[in-house]
Length: 142
Figure 1: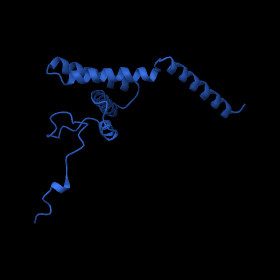
Figure 2 (figure 1 turned 90 degrees about the vertical axis):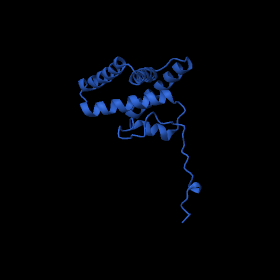
Figure 3 (figure 1 turned 45 degrees about the vertical axis):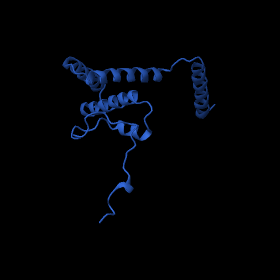
Figure 4 (figure 1 turned 30 degrees about the vertical axis):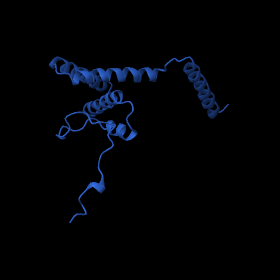
């Protein structure tokens, strides 16, 4: 038996195992991790949007705990913080707008809009496709 046969046999066993747990409606570990992360990010988002200072401080503390755990695991502090905040934003937005388009979801992966965007007083509407109509412009009226 060569190495390819071992890989093929192992892949087949994994596929059978996954099919059996899916048939029994048992979530895999990755599914559980995703659900927990989504719920936790929604909780943090709720606290971040809260009017109470205590809630905002608690949300900042939870975010810093995530960054500290990543730093303790050997990851770069600044990059870990940036990626953690971007991922939290993405999970928060996906939980709020589950029917958003793929292009909007890709935008969310970049993280929250910069604070320089003064026109952004609230979260963007992911279902808004734009209302620009070139026929409505007065470009041709010279």
